[in-house]
Image 1 (tube, helix red, strand yellow):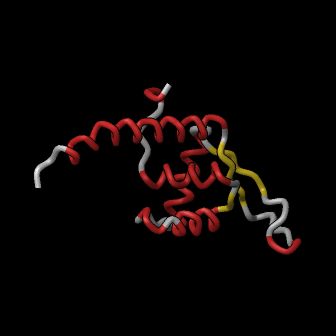
Image 2 (cartoon, one colour):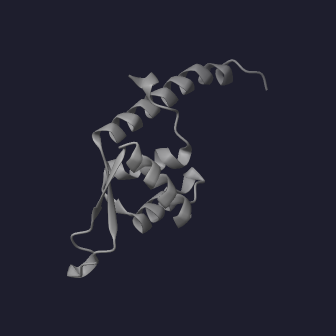
Length: 114
């Protein structure tokens, strides 16, 4: 199963991980990724929406209109992104791939020279 999906860029991994936690609009995704301070990843809106279009085309995420934005106001322009079943599989496959890599690389540090 893990071999059928491509390795993800860190940005893509964090976007899918954020959406796995909760559906989110674009600005919210940018803020959530920035909140993961150790990631070193920053998203500009143009790049984010380009990635989200690609993910929609690959059926990793769905796009919908926000039912409610804050405090009962509605904004039909705000798009909300949700991870799909395929997107969740892609995320799980990438996490498994990274875990395998870490398991293979860690012994090098344990037996390495100073």
